[in-house]
Length: 185
Image (cartoon, rainbow, N blue to C red):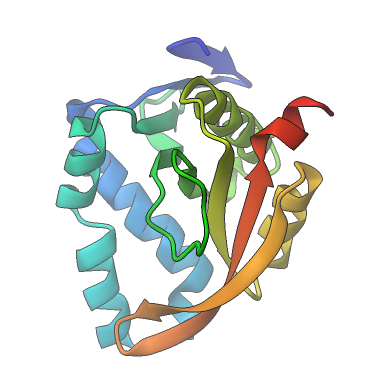
């Protein structure tokens, strides 16, 4: 995977510490745009602070073996991001060395340009380089478009769990792609 490439007028590159403020703003915006209407204001605010705050991305940047990529517009604004790292999802019986596609968000104006597909391909390349036997992700049970995208790559739903957003709980699907199976396709 190249460190920096240009696609459709966007520069896709590794995130750096100089991106932290813009990345936090983008992560909060894209989550709120997609899911904010589902939650009480106080639940959304506490979730965004805990899960989409600066410390989350500082930690990702500082953790060896993590992947944090961004897509930057010609105007220098961040419009999409991908975060991958060590498996932290409730994946029972996951073999050692599995990894997780933690987040993939594309801001509305950039949707439909293939960034989601590109970022999944980058995540799979990264996971294979890590020597991971499988890559996991979670997706909201009612996010049908994302589910279809992941299924096109061969991810399969293997479980369900309750995902907290403040005091609210969402039904989340746990999905897995065995990388040995994927590499044979």
